[in-house]
Image (tube, rainbow, N blue to C red; front, side, top):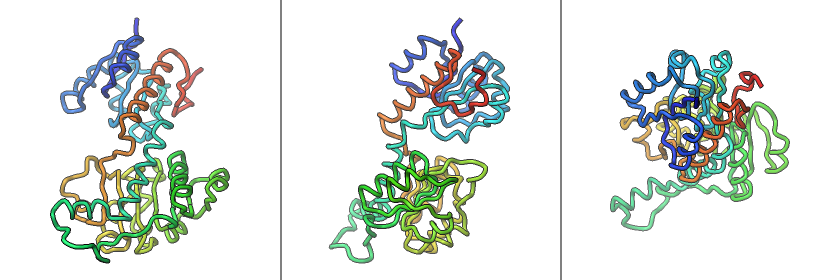
Length: 325
């Protein structure tokens, strides 16, 4: 008998066919109230789950006594209780490599957009308010040659450093849990304490995962260390930042600007104070949102799940302690 898979993310026809060749698939087309009810009903017979953007806690997964594997179409795994999954020997996999370059592109797009005030000035033109050559009141700031500070030097951090160092001649500072000698050699990067990086960098970019240790890492005390001309970029997770403290720093011009692809609550409320500030560029968590990358992520997740359900170790296993070999 085929394994039962609950799919809560639409796949391309080719990937759906690939999954259906090996499994019986129940597709949950929407995660609205009706969809969540269907999901709960389907869990009782599920051997595998595949999807993204849904918090799967113990209360929900207790409804899936036969569950063997979850394939998340994401890098971040903060929607999962990894200790719980490991205790139950449920294999969790993610898609860490295929979105690195695309997400770094997004980070650099935010750097350029905030530094050169692209959104603000484009809106000025669109609304018919461009009447003469712009003057100092609308000037931005250069990116080339400025100091790039990266907090969290994983794959995406490295890709961001590559763009800054080789493309824009930016000195690179970084802070992470451990020193990265290869990164230091390749990009002439220098390690700094978090406090020193915040004080020295012109552009401060977060590329951290959300964990118990990183939640709320950047708050009022950290924004106070930044310079008035510094620009803050977040392409990691919204809850790494105290959003109220960020809004306060922007309102009082303790920092120049912020480029944000992630927020404490998503989607961002339409009445968020962030949307009233001209020195904010806000995008809808689009870091990996290209056709090519999203298809590659979904393909990776399908292969991870099929391997796990076939009794093989997935290529991107998050909780190796759950693997019984």
